[in-house]
Image (cartoon, rainbow, N blue to C red):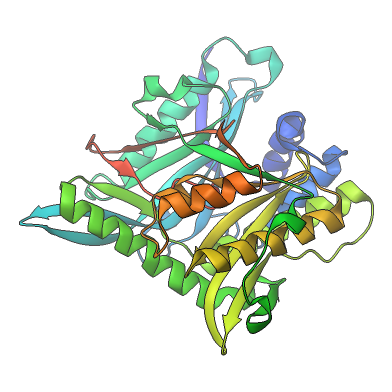
Length: 374
């Protein structure tokens, strides 16, 4: 039996693949048609920028999604996936306590699916190897391109040269907001975030924060680090996706809140943005920053009030967002706060993150949290 792998712009073929994969990826959505509609909504966001041909990928055209299909000689779909190209950073130590930042673009895999009749026959491996080879051909002259994915099938992708990066999350459970005492709470103003367009200041600050953190670490240990660039486009996709799924899952249109900014004398001193996992009934933190532990208390309290209104279960936060960033707050202070509200640490993320450089270089994946997820 012979097989053909191709990137496709054929919407009918894409729809066929999506109907097949809906059983795996529709999550909290009840109907396959709702899943297809969710994907159409996603493809119209700026992050996805519609379907792209592989020859359109370059530094001048950063975003774009490509759908890949492996078919047998009878035209049967035996495996499929998506790749999304996104802006990224590569930071390398340059000796003498210095580092350099290279702005690049890097693709990531998603929605890998093999129909039941073709499982256990190596079809997904065949497809993914083929896609990686095509990507390597596109980026063969660029040493600063990496590729990432989130695995729902354990360490399967190690055989393709990917390195896994395990990350822990912590949970703050609903109902503890009354245990949080914010000193002089009246001096702060709380601004709700409901749209990505309200996040330009947040994204600009967070971009500088994570990049400067990575540069400082590279300057000290001289290791290579990679990270995807925080953008408003990412938040637009996350918010749009969560809003669509929530409205469908709950059977009614809901205007969701996606974060808060904390102001003191009209100056932003803290913020948090989040998305929702409607299946797990959780609020999942994306970007977070705070100038002191008092502001962190207020951020958590505000998020818990949203959780209460939705009757959801918990807030999920990547531990690295508290303990790896260079905050003017000690890890001990954060740990004391988490203990006081009975937060639980050490949860393993069910989606294992993995990445590789096409050139085989060893590296550390910075800011490997929820928001780079695709």
